[in-house]
Image (spheres, rainbow, N blue to C red):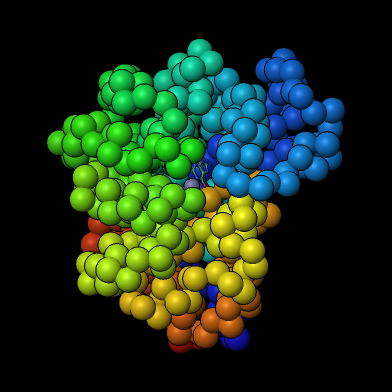
Length: 335
Ligand code: HPA
Ligand SMILES: [Zn+2]
């Protein structure tokens, strides 16, 4: 197998996927019709034509509008199930899904509908597809600390359904320090903690995520390239970064995939992983990210194996399951 074929076939974990970002235009229209929700776009084609983003905020405006069709537990289940079918085709064997409860509870959708719908799809993915799956609740950083605390309280009755918390939405102007106290509470509850940092924001936000939020992983983190001390720290600690190459391209974080820093980060010894972020909006699911990155950066077979192994190293699975997945990577790489 050449590097591209290996990138497709290798077993992998996906650790940075916003499940609301997997809503394809066709499903948005189907759910809008099922729920009687009016959309600002006349057709699937008109909606897709609006997917021309200049930065993170221009994407988020459309992403939140798309999520407005989600009302019932069945809707959340159907969205996640559609993702799992695509993930299976890409040889994803483990997935940790972000979800944004505030996007839904602010519209009057019950927390139970959001979490039980998603958790039901995760159970079904395990049973019917053999994909292990977990949920990570994200706080919207453009909202207040008080809103994050209230969201955590509302989610605690469903504590058994999520393994951790994250921080997403508009980065610049909303530094991690704003959420220091709510993250401390989450850690006390035994939750894993991750945060988006260094997507559009500066390396300083990554330092804050590490030092103040005490994160287990950083989402994106491409800004580390601007800070040699931070690069050295990340190489030393192997704190994982969930990098999203096609997202970076579509949101103009990089101008060309050939300029993407992923290979330089890998060569510097960082635990970088490849992920799809919002695949319905950014032009591809996990294998599209692996394959296009492999070709644009001329990754070797060894690079591809390292990325797949990093995805399991960075995941929140238990050690026995991790060993089994790593052995499966070696088997495919050897064959
Ligand atoms: O890439 C992202 N960055 C920040 N917030 C998000 N919410 C969905 N996708 C993203
Ligand atoms: Zn993201």
